Each structure stands twice: as C-alpha cells, then as structure tokens.
Amino acid sequence: MLNVIRPAAFDFSRRGRAVSEVLARVGDKWTVLVVSTLGGGPKRFNELRRALGSISQRMLTLTLRGLERDGLVTRTVFPTVPPRVDYELTKLGRSLLDPVNGLSLWARQHRAAIAAARGRFDAVQTKRA
Figure 1 (cartoon, helix red, strand yellow):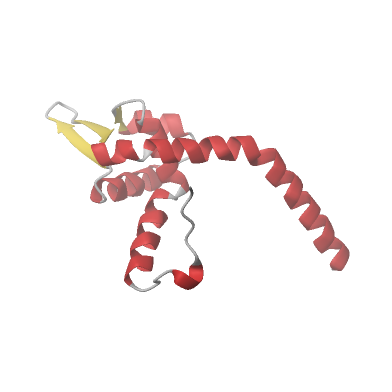
Figure 2: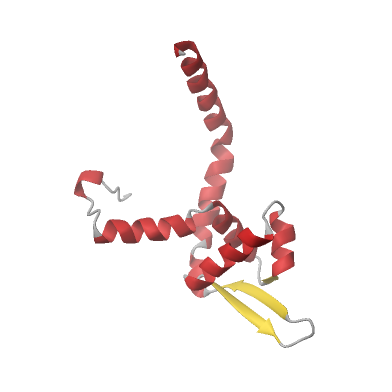
C-alpha cells in the first residue's frame, strides 16, 4: 500500500524542512540528468557536459559540487598532466537511480497527456481573459 503524506498531519517544522531540503537537491532538473548519466559509470567532467548537452560549465560545476557535498557523487583526481578528474555515483547516489529512472519513465509516458491538459487549460484561460 502506498504511503500518502497528508498535509494536515505532516510536521512542517523539522521533518518538513529536512524533506524539502533533500527533495530540492534530488528533484532538480540537472541533478536528475547528472545522476542518470552517471548511472552508466564514472565520467569525466567534459564527458558529462557533452552527454548533457545544454548545461553550462558553471551549472555542471555547481550541480556536481552539491551532489558531492550531499554524498551522492565522488570526485577523484588523478595525478596526471593535465589532471584527470572522474565523477562517480556513491552507494547512496546509486540508490537514487531507481526513483530517478522511475520518474523519468513516468514523465516520458505522460508527456502527451500533460501537454493536452495544458492546451485545454490555456484555451479556457484565453476565453476568460
């Protein structure tokens, strides 16, 4: 049976902030894409950047730093010239793959239905204006 969090019963003080903090990290667009990409194994910074396409260098750096801080990604520097840096999911990061992949699958399966709903909503809003 699915556990449902009911807003009236949910403690929005300590627990609510803790959940919000974690969801803000793991629900971020770039986090989802980085975690999915690293699910295939370790990658160098530029490999990640190419795989993600439209992410800026700064945004990828900030995302990786946040994931490293939260214990989801490890950063390994190899003493070569130039230095080689690999990023890899930790055990905790790998545990995020199933939920992230599930959410990604859901989004792909329901994208058309959501687009249709938006179209209907926008049409009603246009008539009201």
